[in-house]
Length: 423
Image 1 (cartoon, helix red, strand yellow):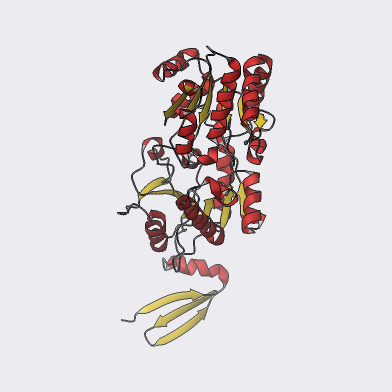
Image 2 (cartoon, helix red, strand yellow):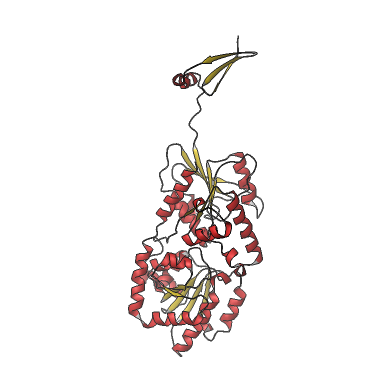
């Protein structure tokens, strides 16, 4: 009995028998027929989009985690082709709506016994052993490039504030962000960022070709951040022991966000209002770098009894506070986008925010812009909102119109375009 083996190279059909080799030339039209007859034609290789879902799976979500969650949830609405699949990587099981996966989607738990190094260790190993067609990291970092791993990698660089304003970051965080971003710029096949301002910053600092970067604006989740009835707002005010007249800030209480300026501004605003004024300042968010200095300003403020730090709140409570707020304050020194601004606009709150490039790009003329270093100017802006109801209403209407320009569906569509373009 003779044993034969077959292979095709550049249209030539090879027939082998132990130590003898016979070569039969066949025409291209017969090529596939011969292979199908021998059952040697490869099946259509599936296209696998792998996505890091760790950030999206966090219970407490700041800007990056919110972006990752909203983007993945909206990407689920995109119909997949017959040969396409999506795999969500996470070190733990997916929770809540994130775990509800449509056809063609699956989750893969990549367990890791250590507190740090999941992306660099476990994900790198997964890409080495089972490389997908493309891998996407919504957070600002990518795994190591192990030998033979050739799948395209896409990551989102949210901002480069650590490079422009290193004084606003603690040393450890700054060092980590510098390292992660350099690796991303060097090794990623394509970069995504969240504003044209951030894109220009990346190009300027890292000398990246603009063609390697795609801008995908963010949006507010209007299923949560929307105008609510008084019946929906009142319980939240009562639970947090708040009156009906207050200025609101939402975000991490750290140096980058410049919260000290609005504390000083509020103190000045209250001084001009006199005894018995009902206005309060409400700060929502967890402490971050520089909070001790912030706390010192609060403790020594003349109006300290009217300044409330509420810590972390659920999104539904934040939406209610944004609906009730006299104005929303966002005095950041540096931002890549600033999602809370759009969320506040969607709830009908007028904005008083720092005059920085990202805010100008996103908000247009729908907010009251103030120099981030000028506490007196913030105090005057608060006074204008309180004393000029016509101006306040004009800002409200402009804000609602501005919010409508941003949609997570647009963000997801542009992200899909990037991923599909690399397959």
